Length: 458
Ligand SMILES: *[C@@H]1O[C@H](CO)[C@@H](O)[C@H](O)[C@H]1NC(C)=O
Ligand SMILES: *[C@@H]1O[C@H](CO)[C@@H](O)[C@H](O)[C@H]1NC(C)=O
Ligand SMILES: *[C@@H]1O[C@H](CO)[C@@H](O)[C@H](O)[C@H]1NC(C)=O
Ligand SMILES: *[C@@H]1O[C@H](CO)[C@@H](O)[C@H](O)[C@H]1NC(C)=O
Image 1 (tube, helix red, strand yellow):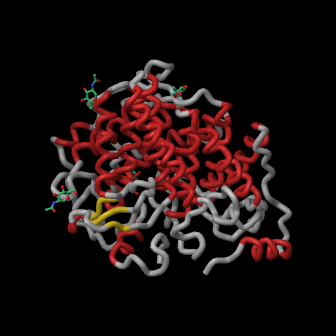
Image 2 (cartoon, helix red, strand yellow):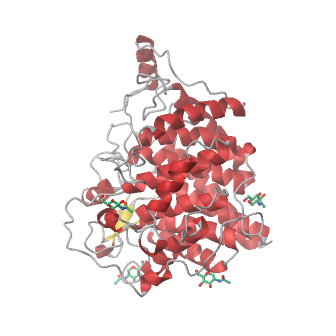
């Protein structure tokens, strides 16, 4: 099954690789130029701003959550490069998708709205607040911070102690497939948002929830002693069995949360907590070695599905989020730079080298470890991953996420979204057969793990 890198390198001689994007990781201008090309390629996939289309949606078959992830990438793009080309479509999309309870729960998305899907938009709003992305001036529009708080406030009451001793279920609504599954990405995004809200606002309620989500996942084994993150667990079996599939984005969302908690405790001179989170953060970073190619040194890959060509549309974007949170972690926990930067650099160079396909000869594929050979897999996921791995090299160009006390402008409302508890959403009868969202494959895999290698999608 495994194709050796040298065989692929030989193949590359046969292909003309005239294009490719130039990237000198030591030169911020070169990084910005490269990222600009890739960002333009990502933007081409987006149609929601066209007349008659819906702002915030990617065209089929791309799910709603991925659009939220994409606008997070554009928020960061503006932050890292100063190029505001995509700010207007980003604001328009995020405001249009605010939905019920001002918490990114648009009724149109009920069928695909898991906790993780909602949280990807919530994380975009959190990044907007941290980066001082201008708040929308449209009347009656909440601030970016309020939107992130609303996502938190709708999710915390969903903490479910009926089974598994706690945890968030994957799904919000009982009629969606996956309601019986407690997964790492849902709990990890909640952890990420809670930790960053704690850092931004100084409110310890958020950090207590972050600790709770972390401790629960450790207890169930979704995070193991070697900081490997597994996909999730069936709550009908009281989480006694796990799906051991590993995704880059699970490590990513947790890395950022741990970095934020280290930052808070260090800033507060709480040495015991700082030491604890330093250890966790180092462990998470070391644990990501599973996501770096065994032969192409320090080049990131999606271990569960890249080698066997089985990454679905969702999964083809996951590397974007590991790269994103590697950048964030270096910014808020600078001691991690020597551990993280070599991997991000090698990955960015490898990614740029294969962005050489399509009529423009700058379209990026999925596999970065083939020494410049583009694998012909195109989409917003591939494009976003290449963009994130490049733009996060620019950490020295930005001051880092603000807080309420260090220049934050986005207004706080600790009660945002809490009306959701007293005013539950009303549903129409829905069919659940077509339900899919982040990680849908994984529930299926849970039933029959161990087809090939345990970590691989079969
Ligand atoms: C919901 O769908 C309708 C019909 O397609 C569309 O007009 C509206 O903008 C959508 N709302 C959101 C928040 O996506
Ligand atoms: C279910 O799992 C939780 C967490 O591991 C444990 O505390 C609880 O005792 C288990 N319940 C049953 C009925 O096994
Ligand atoms: C905490 O994070 C901020 C950026 O949000 C950074 O400026 C600061 O140096 C970090 N604190 C420590 C102790 O590293
Ligand atoms: C802290 O956050 C919690 C949860 O949202 C909220 O209930 C509480 O009022 C907040 N405290 C302060 C001082 O803002």
